[in-house]
Image 1: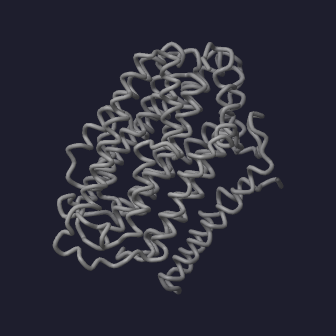
Image 2 (image 1 turned 120 degrees about the vertical axis):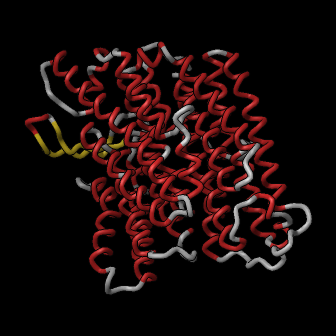
Length: 493
């Protein structure tokens, strides 16, 4: 790869957003959407070339470094290992699909929504490739701004309340992270005499960072973003009020920033502390699985139902990463991808239904399979992936998490099993309520799926099946880096 290639991928969407902003007064909304979609597809095409030159398990690659604020030990340093490469691929894959979900809707000011999505893509990509703590924090905070507007401007009737709640929770986590970052850098200077924000240098001296309060400060900051029980309450409101494209990206990528941060900071920089508390962390993840599943069972709003299922499924991520086993952590990373595809597809499904029926009340639906037969098959595939059905990505990731929990403590795996059962129950109940039974009054003549809607759902459904039947390459991509994190501190297989 040429120098600057990774930088080009990261900043391409933002540059496109700036160009669109400059031209927006002179071009139509249709032209803006074409330009935005084109930029996101180009970013995907470029990102898709990265695996060809990548060597799994060899650490950070495609690294780019430039001096930024040398007096403070801050530099522009980016690169990817297998874990971050997978997140880059997920991000660039989902953003074009999210833009397509908003293409034919009734969203006002579509120019602004497209511009916000492109800025958000750059911020999320920056988080996944940053190898300087200051740069990481800058991208982390930058992602808050476009998402704030996506929910607050293009959201539903209660969007202001949801936006404020989203902002307060995430900002509180960000402040805690900033305190922890500065403390970590100062602690490193005290131990080594070197002032640096370079992640790779800090990683080399991680044995000196066995400070429990720093570990928990980072964990809480990232737990808010995932979100983990009990700091999850902002998510159902944010999902319910966000536009469909916002929900797809929020579920598909933004939540994964929290899991990624746990890997990089909690496990990567504090492995001995993570090892000490892995039973507690795994138990917290299992609690999230069960709690989210129970909450789904009492929801009457389709979007809120999917939002709480997201809380449950992200509990597998916390449980897997917290187990500090190779199987569990690998499953947790794969679950981030599986959840991004399957839950992103479910939010797209809800958006498709809402555009036609103009309500999300579960009781208003029934018999849709008789009116939209092709839609029912696509809906069924993503439903099966969300419930962890064999042959889908959800089965592979959840099985690996349960295997990791079993290796840590068999009782933990046993406690998580009811979550698997409840997941199947609530997903099948939702599918049955919407798709089967007599056709509800007013639903007899729903418009068939548009080509772009078929494309979005088919691509996402294809993704969960490909990973489900061919998981080897994806697991191989990340396991070497998981072993590097765990190695030498007593992690299990």
